[in-house]
Length: 385
Image (cartoon, rainbow, N blue to C red; front, side, top):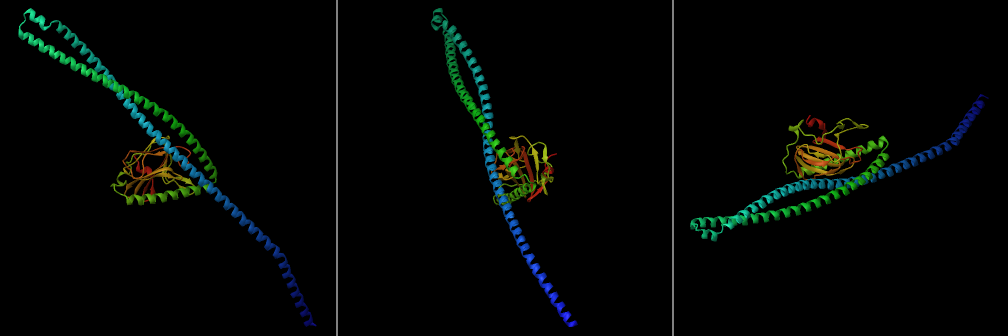
């Protein structure tokens, strides 16, 4: 009897186990399908987000390319204005010099005319006392010879004065013609300047719209941080290329900056908007400093060297890099236009660019950086205090 009861219990337990297994199987299959569907949904959402990010990045890249073209156009126009301004200044100086020469010649002409009048008057008076009258009056031959020589000298002086007066008159006419030409050139240049400045204003308006759109696309901190990191990588890459090119083409002896620490002239004077090594965005810190200055102000080289980079660089705008030798380089970014090209040798305090806000900056200023053997160092410590 005990064995029968035991056998029945085993059968019941086995039955219960089978029932539980069937129940588990029944409930687990729909749950697994649901999870699979959720996983597929997540994958699709990730793919959609990635597509959105890719589309957004492409849009940002396109906008940055537009910004580059606009800022290069602004640079070309600004350079034309700079050149025309210089020509106008030279022309103004030339016109002023011509006017002074014209006044001097007019005074000279008056003097020559007075001298001619005096000579004519003297000759007239001397003519009244002619040789025939002298002969009839019984004067001696010695006196007659002296009077004859005097008359000859008087005639020569008159002829010379007439020649000088004619030359002065011709020179005056030439100066008047040159003056008319240069005033016409001045008028043409002023009209050209007005047109170029109008073009510049239109280009700057278009640029501001592009900058606003880019900033709208980069409104999240993570996107902006990513953009800054990419910009820094581009700069490092360009530094390496520029350094290699400088080493390959080094023909100008350059002694580096080591002996001039704390003595270098400032590239521009103005308030420091961003200091070296202060927070820029997230964990990123400034590798140089930004000095506020009005658009169009001259940027000066801090020391002699050779231009190894002069182009538009994303995030830095129109950038110029000078190799000073011994691994020392100075960087000048955000410029409106560049006045030098790669290969040019420059001296300390020489104008190399004009201040601007290229690279999508919100305000005008100069980005200035010094690197030694590729490593950034505080630029302020190298400048005169």
